[in-house]
Image (cartoon, rainbow, N blue to C red; front, side, top):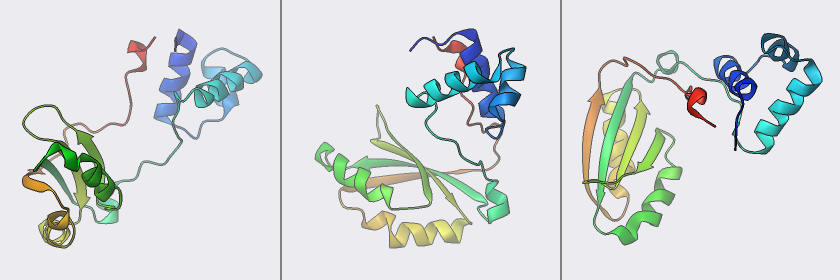
Length: 154
């Protein structure tokens, strides 16, 4: 899909504050409200905008620890089973299939080390087909963003 500069600006604005009205966005991109609303609807319909959501502050919810776990499976035939298993684990907030020495990279948001240990003992260690977990603890988030560089699109 080709995005023009107006589409890109609309996406930038929505990434900054998805609660903006079509009228507010229209004013900021120098359009009248109806064509702006149509652009936003098209971006939704074409799947450019996947969903509108609230971004929560993990520490305010008691989620004070971020773990990145590299997962190596016994065999590649276990991919689907592993993918299905992680869908039901709420603390796993991101899961990627990787190229390289490991098969998956997980981002886990949890309360503390004891919370991660419970998760590991009760759920992660019971997923069949896992050869190894390599766990890394994040100390401080230097940059964390959900914003994508829309100016590179198109």
